[in-house]
Image (cartoon, rainbow, N blue to C red):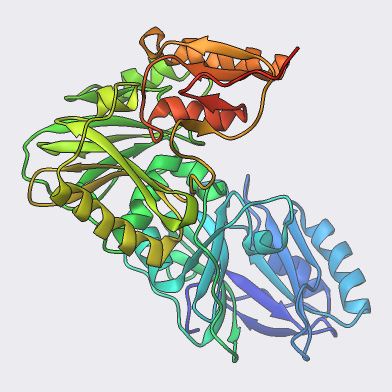
Length: 438
């Protein structure tokens, strides 16, 4: 065998044993399938029955999670009657924090809590990455080097613990040659894997895989072992950042200095909305802020001197030196080439602009005094000094009343104030809009 596979036995439509990864007890016809099932079955560990045809047809029947030899025999009789070849294999735990998916022609798709067939499931949102990026991301998160053959179609799963016939961390479910043109897709999230490790974490791991400047980070996730990525900033300081499963701007803790991540999760996240906690190298910031692609492909670059937490929570943006703006623009240009339109949080120590957060989205249609597009016949006043919880309650009221939000003090378009209003889908302005005549 060329790959690590789940322990298996393969049978023809006549019930005869063809191949196996273990010594199968002797038996006649389909009875031998039942004997093989008895050898593979163990308490809490069911078996799967896969099928294939000589002509290589895709999407043939797959019976998952069979718990008795008699059920295996019953399913096998029905499938061989239709002319299928069978593969009986031990069930690999797909809920262990690992992922399953398909690698083909330079593209890899994967998700947690699923078999490789997840790529065919319209109810799931799989991660889609170029093969080289996927190899880096999965190697980083699961802590071992892996690669995907460029000319093969590989159905695979990656696991936190060693499994299968070779006792390795990656299982190959099916392998075949895949001639044809390379495949490609836009990198985007949220997806089911970004929700597993946290939205902010996923964006930074992808950015690191692309060779972009991400501070060295220790990610403490709920469902996978702690992992590291990024490059040291040489600051000898730590920032703690929470990474919700979906973007929740400004809702959870970001602090300068170490905090116990487990206490933080216990106190702040009883609903388990946080995928991971990040202990990230600090940046001794000369300037920091946020930026995004805006109307016409231009950039909105905002911030202030020093650390950017005050700006993100509603402080007024300050003029930035031209060399800082130019450096952020260069970083955005690199990111656009790989990711398309992005919104980022950044900080510069005078030597390097560092990425602190990455989202694939744009602020097209936003700019000037407009925080969020749209019209309203009534406007609710919001003072940034009242804090984000007040703003979230106000956006709920605005949605219910078809109203807009008027921010009474200047704030950054790319700050959390703007993010919260846009996420709520209500109009937002920093100049009091004229109301239509009564």
